[in-house]
Image 1 (cartoon, rainbow, N blue to C red):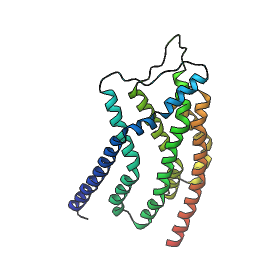
Image 2 (spheres, rainbow, N blue to C red; image 1 turned 180 degrees about the vertical axis):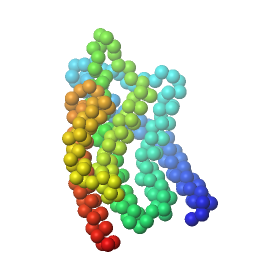
Image 3 (cartoon, one colour; image 1 turned 135 degrees about the vertical axis):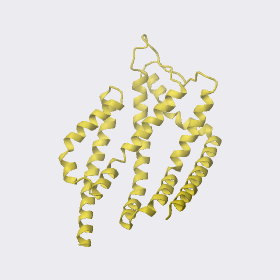
Image 4 (cartoon, helix red, strand yellow; image 1 turned 90 degrees about the vertical axis):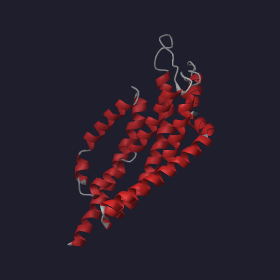
Length: 251
């Protein structure tokens, strides 16, 4: 298409995406109370676990300014809108860029779309339901109460929850990324396999950096990454064989 038509299509795509996000944001504002209660589940579970273990209850979350509560509620509604609307937004992006791809590339993107969304959702659930509760309990009880006590604010809690869960969502995309680079011929499956030890070391370092200095939390992050890498190796081998067959058919 001419540049003018590309720009017009981009404008329509942005309008559709903006309308979808705005509608979901309004729905999130209407459902503010249940969304906040859902977001607060790990914190309430952390408080209960600490009390059961005989440790100090950090108490309810706090906000330090008159607007912090409102801003956190709006951020929660926006985050929910982006998470729920992510498949549609990605589909709109695909519709815009798909016209510039050849049919073989379009088929590859279509095959990867649903698994990519599912892997990201699984990563979000793992971060929120498994990693977050344990990490919170460790962090808020790390120091001796005689030295300092935890008084967690809404803003700090929101950033921690969203940052950790979204990070795990992207980490769970690792098998799909490995499949894609192998399918595109950017790297061979044998190279990925021979680099397994280096990859595991890098994943252990990464897990140590993003988690508290606790071996259990590091294991909760590092072990899934190793499993995902092994799955990615199998998918990379399949992608490489499929690429070889396609090249042979073209010849």
